[in-house]
Amino acid sequence: MLESQENYYKTCRKLAGFTQESASPLLGVEPRRLSEYENGAKVPDDVVDKMAEIYNAPMLAIWHIKMSSELTRKYLPDIYPTRTNSDLWMQTSIACKQSGLAEETIMTALCDGQLTFDDMPYIDAYIKHNDAATGNLMSAKAYISKAKNELSHSREAKRQNA
Image (cartoon, rainbow, N blue to C red; front, top):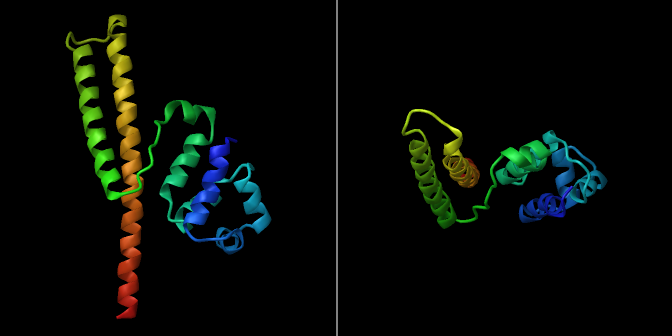
């Protein structure tokens, strides 16, 4: 497992304000096992799902899936962290521009109604732009989903206190 992946689980836990001891029962694992996960042991998908929800870190689940196998690393787009509302806007804006470039390149390739080997540069450019747009949109979606969750919890807390 990559060192950055090992630390990502730990960083998300710490950013959420949990110690290993306080997070473990919520995740349904022993503190020792959580430590092992944070130090390189394979983390089961169901535990990552709980981490993403409990730590309020949807990017954790997306990132975990991306890093789960050579196949997903090869075909899933890179995901860029979205940390602020400005990041959200920029990710969305960049994704729109990349989608437009993807559309232009594939339209150029298809102008004669078929794809041929001569269109390979356009096909490569289409894939590149499409992957970039997808990565930006996945990042933006994870951020806005987290914000929606926080707003829903805040609203529910206000209702209970009223």
